[in-house]
Image (cartoon, rainbow, N blue to C red; front, top):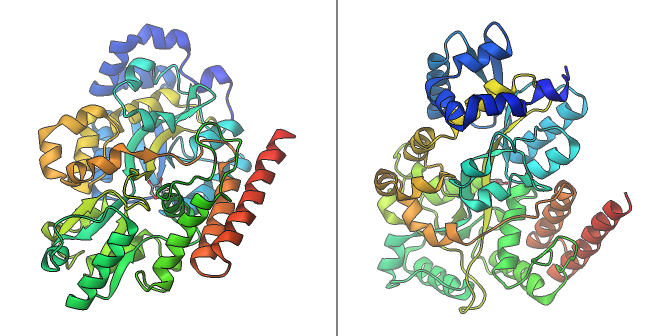
Amino acid sequence: MKGSAERRLLSRRRFLELGGAGLAGAALLGVAGCARQESKGLVRLVFSHGEDSEVLRDQIQRFNQRNKGAIEVALRLAPADTDQYFEKLRIEFQAGEAEADIISGDVIWPAQFAAKGWISDLSDLFTADLRASYLPATVDSNTYEGRIYGVPWFTDAGLLYYRQDLLEQAGFSDTPKTWDEMKEMVAKVRRDRGTRYGFVFQGSEYEGGVVNGLEFIWNSGGGVLAPHGIDKVIVAAPEAVAGLKTARGMVTGRVAPVAVPSYKEYESYTVFLNGDAVFMRNWPNVYARAADPSLSKVEQERIGVAPLPVAHPESSAHSGLGGWNLMVNTASEKTEAAWAFIRYLSAPEQQKERALKGGYLPTRKDCYEDGEILSRVPVIELGREAIRDVRSRPVTPLYHDMSLAMAEQFHASLAGMVAPERAAATLQERLQEILERSDSL
Ligand code: GLC
């Protein structure tokens, strides 16, 4: 299935022939011309993504309509859970059997896939000029050793959702700045209103649990790796341990449900939108669900959004950066057509439509100045502070191993299987081993 490097990538010469404007025009008007040059007949592309939605299906259909006879994209649904999707792709890539031409991927994947040679270097297509219109953090998540391996599609940041109505009724006019304030608010609301749970979040042993664990650690002033560079592990330091203790304290203090160590995104928002929790940590697109009465018992107007609480009132809150990118399978011989589809899907019109209809946060800067988006996707304004202060998970080919170790220890600590200090010490050793192993390769 593998073609030569020249065939796989749009050559530099062809790119210059098309020219920046030509290429943009091709993407806008449809790429009938380019596609025909790549192969005489219809170019069929497979796009792999983990979430089915009407808006995505409509967009694909519109693309196919515009490019009738030249390119046809088929959606191949992958698991929605990021870990399962990753595993599926990893197995397929290793076996040389990855069929999708275009792959949607979590922000933590490009460095890992690029290091293995599984996804194409798009630096010559996704030029510095084009990249300048995207939020820098989303571009960074596609950068590996100075080259660019994907185009940001939508972005995510961890947000604190709260029940505005319940807090007001209990006499609170502000959102909690610290975890202690949050606990006080929970105690009062539950006393007054009998709300079942205080705070729900993602504590299961999976990627979401890693992001939640990191947020607890960051917001206690700690870290897993030293801020600059990825070679120094600092997770056994007292600040990081304090983050794990805060998380565990949510369970022992009955602020969170005892089952929270098994919660993923779905369990968290199901409880919250059912009206059973005062606070929830989740991603921005949950806000859109509250607008639909068939999905939520709590109307959107009753829900507020704020940055996550911190341990010390003087420190600023950090949210984990999430989001999804569009990448090209190195083995695909249809890069020109794949690129046209990526340009289309990540263009302002499509990003805007996904924001309006699905609550997915755009990756393009100009969308954040679009009046219609701002008024119809209130989570952007409400979550602006949190969205600004995002932190990435380590961008490294070693991430998968690191993530497994973090998921295991964060979960064990949250579930009370090991003390937070022990979990942090074990994780310190594991991460050091992973880094040392890679040094000796
Ligand atoms: C969301 C985020 C992604 C993260 C995942 C964890 O899909 O966009 O970055 O890894 O949640 O469950």
